[in-house]
Length: 187
Image 1 (tube, one colour):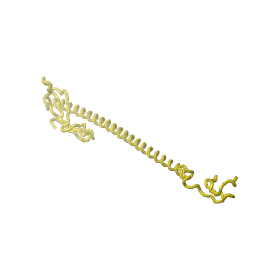
Image 2 (cartoon, helix red, strand yellow):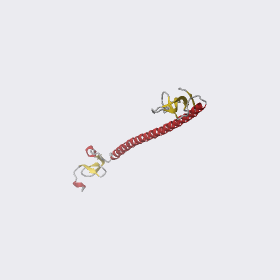
Image 3 (cartoon, rainbow, N blue to C red):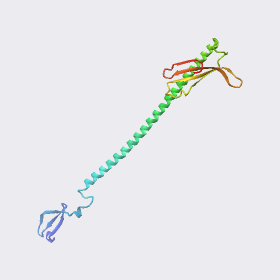
Image 4 (spheres, helix red, strand yellow):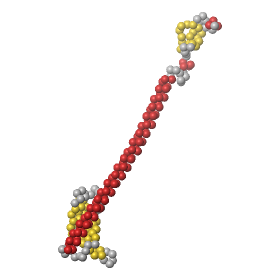
């Protein structure tokens, strides 16, 4: 059968070519010309291409995961900020409530003082209907203020026109210590 072949290069099963001289095969072989090896998925290129594909997928996965982690971190930070703001609002409300209670206590102390002033004739009145204290030059809901001065009115008479008559008292409250002073007269 080999005698029927003309001399020349023939493909061999070892992925190369061998020369037939007309009588026998030469031991020297020749690689397949590059135009036959140039396919994208040649045996030599498959591991390289597969490695590149895996690398691209790993990088894409890392990038996607990083953006997801970043998003989750942002959401977590926003939740922390919202929680902190809610806690601050609650603390502020508690402080304002405590300040309101202290002002009510001061009004009660001034009412007792005014009643004593009626008894010792310091003021001319029969009774104290109510005492109302208002901050001078600001608001006591401004939590950064350490003290407030109050002008307090002790109502001793209801007028027919709906107004009240009475006496002015003053008070100063230290919010940090909860201590206060008060006395007769405008601040």
